[in-house]
Image 1: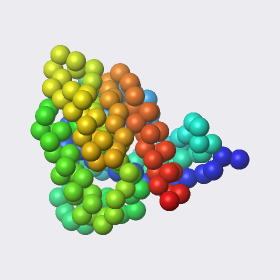
Image 2: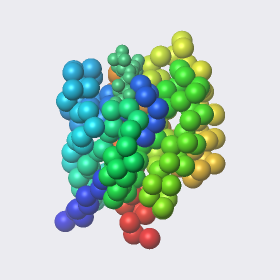
Image 3: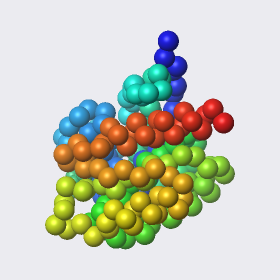
Image 4: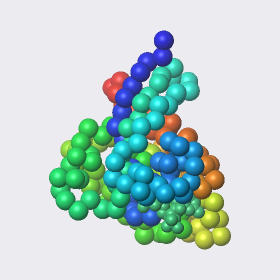
Length: 175
Ligand code: G3D
Ligand code: MG
C-alpha cells in the first residue's frame, strides 16, 4: 500500500514571477483563465502520486495575491507549511536577487528551515532571458535546494517542480 502524506506548501517569490500561473497549470492544467479571481489568496488542493517512493501526497498549495499587508495574514500563510516553491522570473534579475529576502522571511516567520525548490520560471521567453542556468543552479546548490527550470505557459517541468518538492518533504519528514 502506498504511504499517504498531506503537506501544506507555500508559493514564494516577487509579484508577477508566475506563482499563480504555475499553481493553476499544475492543479487544473490550464493557463490564464481568470486565475487571479479563482485563486487569489486562498489555497488549491491537488493529489500527487510520487514515482519511485510509493507515496501519495495531498498538497495544499497556498498562494498570495501580492505582498501580505498584515502580519496576521503573513503568519497564517506560513503556519504549518512543510515546504515551498521559491519562484523567480528568468527575464527579471531583480526577482532572482530577491530570493534571499524570501528565504529570510520564511525563516523569520517559521523559526525553522523547510525544503524549498528553486523554480526558474518563464524559460519559454528565450530571447529576453537574463538569468542563465549556471547562476540559478549555483544559487540553489549554495543553499542546498533543488533547482528546476519551468514554463507555466508551455507546462514544461511544472509537475516536476511540485513532485521534486514532494520528494524532499517526504525525505525530511523521515529525519
Ligand atoms: P504571480 O502570481 O507570481 O504574481 P502570475 O504571477 O502567475 O500572475 O503571472 C504574472 C504574469 O506572467 C502573467 O501575465 C502570466 O500570464 C505571466 N506568466 C506566468 N508564467 C509564465 C511563463 O512561464 N511564461 C510566460 N511567457 N509568461 C508567464 P499577465 O500578462 O497576465 O500579467
Ligand atoms: Mg499571484
